Image (cartoon, rainbow, N blue to C red; front, top):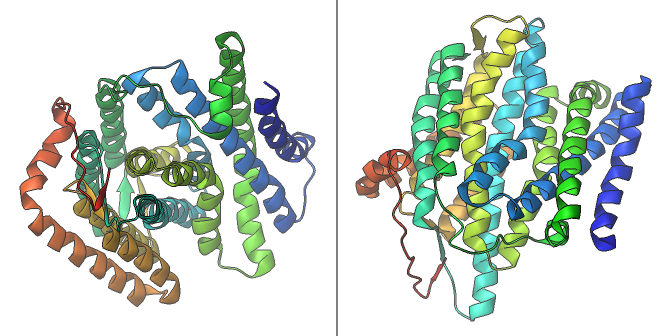
Length: 411
């Protein structure tokens, strides 16, 4: 119990200054406020991630995946939905809602997917003494790919029309609801105990009488802290941009998602380092489904509740960012149609993610979008016989399949 309490105590101490400031109404200069509330959001995100993992001990099979999928997205969504809500009566906040959404999606796929795959291949090569060039996913993840492929095609309407309409939002939310129902019926346990790491493993190892109240308390405490800090953290991002003479759009696009998704990235990387490559990538693929359906679908709803119209209208830059994010997503899905993630694809995703910072601006966004699009098109043509099974996977019951592991492929 003592070992489990140490990291929890550290997170609570990191959250305490922000909570005190929030409820006493004390204002700090924006850069200092950004640090205080940003640290609190990261600490609360870790608590939420540990609680979600430990809860797998008490919630079995696909139901755990379905429930935890919703819980895991809270840190990212709290900030983005605040921006969308405020945009209802302050149109300049539309750019921040779009920035946070596109940044989190590109960060997850361009950095998260690629780094996890490259680490997994490196670890496997070191352990086997042979070059391992490809990671293969279990066939059950074709369900997630099917949802992603359908959502990716639907999301292309956004840059084409220059808006995220309320109807599209409801469609994506309903699609996410169907995803939860679908995976809740899928048995993914394979009769094995959930594999936990770090503080989550220590919490999961406690007696049920101690574990369950602790997990519930962590859920309530971390969720409350995230909701309390979302507004000042979001506003401090904008204020810090002005104070430090940094582009507000870029600060919101990259810093906020990096803070809120840090725990998820760290957990996935730890899985990869420990040789659980498919589990690491599978976790991030599932997270991408959440972002590409629930997050996008929620934005026009929050916008309308905040007093906006039936469509969240994007300007030219925001539409370009959405095109770039959509083509990146389509490339990610296309190269995974065979349920195999080759090393060259991981390097390409990582390289293109990095290049966008070297060639910013409209021409750069269109150029990188074109590269993503060409790779996606070539992959779709090469793997065209896998398109129909992938599209149908969300609507069919999966058959358990044993994955064969060649010498140069990591399962």
